[in-house]
Length: 350
Ligand code: NAP
Ligand code: ZN
Image (cartoon, rainbow, N blue to C red; front, side, top):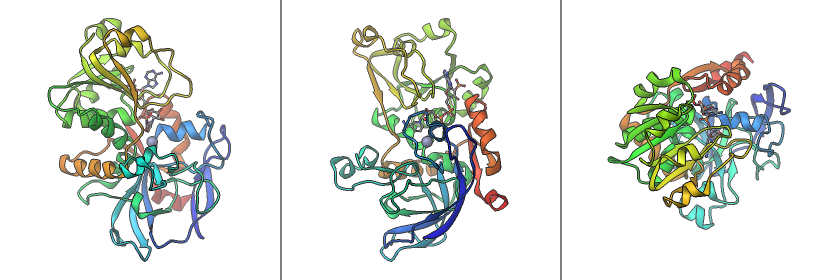
């Protein structure tokens, strides 16, 4: 076992604090990574605060990891020391079920998530990217183009793939009218991807002060979702709406905006159920309510390569890890432009 340092939460209502722990020795198929940057996902906050009821403490959050390879196991041929790499939300899966065979490891019943998940190797929980190093099986390590800014690429590993995957699954492209609900970490990536795929993009926000940013990021139109007149102007007009909101809210306001056969896809995971949907809204236009979970490893690499071609990264606020607790409070106030990323070099001052 090798010494590692990071930040952990020890209880659902106490701040994250410095934490020393161990990473496993490299197996033949493992890659060891010095973590340079890690994005701050709203899922980190949900889990640190045990809002999904599934947290095992201590938790070292972080699943938007980028860094440099420092060592590889004897059977690793795809990576070598010095490579720029990423790790997202998963670090293992069974490799044999239909989901794994179809490159959809995120839906494997035995998927091991990057933190707060039973670790086959240590018998404890997995520990994530708010730390100085990580050891990950090669299958779950992604290559990051040298042309991308590494800090701004970190959020691609979760916010990026979680929005790219449903846009591809629903075959979004030119001629489609696409809605994105919420301009946060996921939402701002969804706007960039939907725009790059050629769709007409409408951003729904509760924050009037985000209108100019949304247009700069690629939205063709911005709707203040609290304004019924603005919402009604778009009735029955959308092919697809991606809802990234992290809090319970009325979905009927959005299903009413779908065309016949249109889909409202949920990726936000609130701690309480939504007070909806209305069945009538769905059946009278054969509309669909769907969900989507991150993306498989192959598709994550495809997304990273797409980002390299289109020069897409996240808009970030880089912070030292000592500011993580304040950053959480700002995310909860929808006050981040548009993803916090931790500079792990700051751990040396911990
Ligand atoms: P975030 O940065 O906090 O963004 C969420 C956005 O939702 C906010 O910026 C805000 O946008 C809007 N919002 C917040 N509270 C709202 C409310 N009460 N009513 C309406 N809109 C509200 O969060 P994130 O990191 O993008 O994550 C979003 C959600 O996705 C979280 O629940 C997270 O756990 C989940 N998630 C799911 C997956 C998956 O695989 N399905 C992966 C990652 C994250 P405006 O200011 O524009 O209104
Ligand atoms: Zn995430």
